[in-house]
Amino acid sequence: MNVLILAAGYATRLYPLTLNKAKPLLVVGGKPIIEWLVDNLAGISDLETIYIVTNDKFAADFQAWSQSYQKCHPEFKFKIANDGSTSDDDKLGAIGDINFVVTHENLSETSLLVAAGDNLFTGSLADFMANARDTEVTVAVYDVGDTEAIKKYGNVAVDAEGIMTRFEEKPKKPQGTLAAIALYYYSPAVLSLVRTYSCRKQCGSARPFCTVALHPHTGEDLPDQRSMARHRKQRNAREC
Image 1 (cartoon, rainbow, N blue to C red):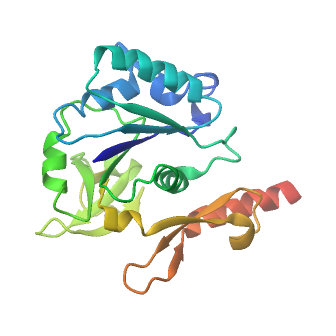
Image 2: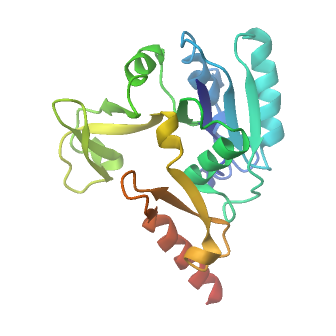
Image 3: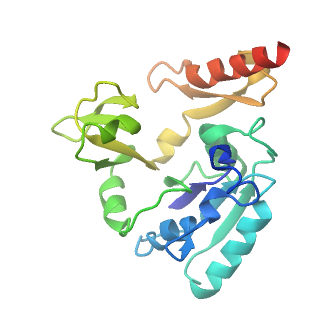
């Protein structure tokens, strides 16, 4: 099993704090955010490589951090993947970065744990992985216990068997208080369903990619309408 940490964003909403430092490398509680996440990977069996996908602006910083961390934790193996983007305007997005690493590193033959690099929590992920291994996809959730607080997150509903039946981002009328965490387990079969298309083909944007998934039964393309709409809006704004 491999791990992919998503760290290619630019965190522009935190400027100037993140102008010259990637958000996962910001120090919280005495160590970088990403270090809290990696510490929680201890104890997971058959862990091969931790891939960190980042951008051209911060690739060297993540390389330096991983080398320093590995000196004290030789059990971990890291590889930094530079997606080549240089700003918020040409970033690939989460699915684009997953596709980039899975394709370039040939990762579709093994299971993959994907986590956002700005996840900040304590507690080992070994139990999560023990429950996820026999599934095609598992999403981590957390009960925030507050109907007002859940309005800030992705609201998830699950049935008695733990199958996700509903997902709504920042709901105005939430159904329950379960929040989805940016922590996903994918089996090899599912990894093959995600790919990217040229935005010039899909929506005319100058950005490099729109995200596309394949319907598991029909094989039809299922474009991410939100990203395409956002790209069209950005393109129209530039034209104006």
